[in-house]
Image (tube, rainbow, N blue to C red):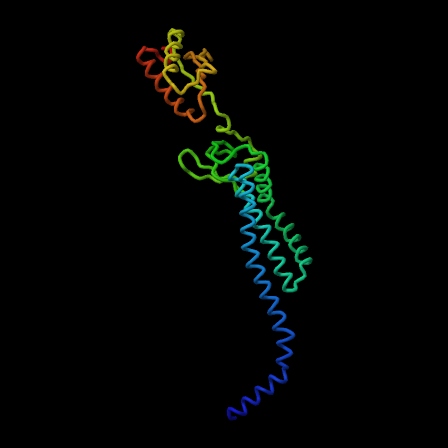
Length: 274
């Protein structure tokens, strides 16, 4: 068969398929819908990102809370993107009402499978509402102590004193006791010094008082407390309770402990009864 005969055969096949009808009834309408759906998705995705950032920034400015800002930004972006996807599928001609029902059923199934994750999510929302701590606070929660770095959808990130990052589930944080060491501006330093029974208590208290007076970071109001707190089998325990600014807590704790120890050694004050 020569080339002209092949061309004639192809033309006959195209005429038989009614190419014009195929293009007008199928390719152009559905191609246009698909192009519009892609356009809706791309534009909607960019718009969702912008709107979520704007919403998160607005929340951050009103609450002055970086954690809440990040939380709202993530959630709003996910919800906006879900709306965009539904709109794009609707443009193609998919029955979105059935899709929404399907998403709801799938969400129920996923929710049953991810009960712990949903619990952590709900706990994260409660933490952001009640604000038991803020970013940068040093807290103890969920069996871990550290500075708050970020609260995510499911976990809280803490940085420990030795610079380790620890992720604690939000559900465990909210269900357990939360101790915030940074919320108040001042803290009391609890110190205990043991002295032998044959030591002059007044002399020991005077030495401790002098050490406290030399420490400029200790507050004068309320005044430090120096009392006999307990009588054990081997020694007398002196309870020392000065107040300091929260940021000075550990510096004063370690500093006073060392000063009192050196002062006791100089005065030949022993720790235990012989």
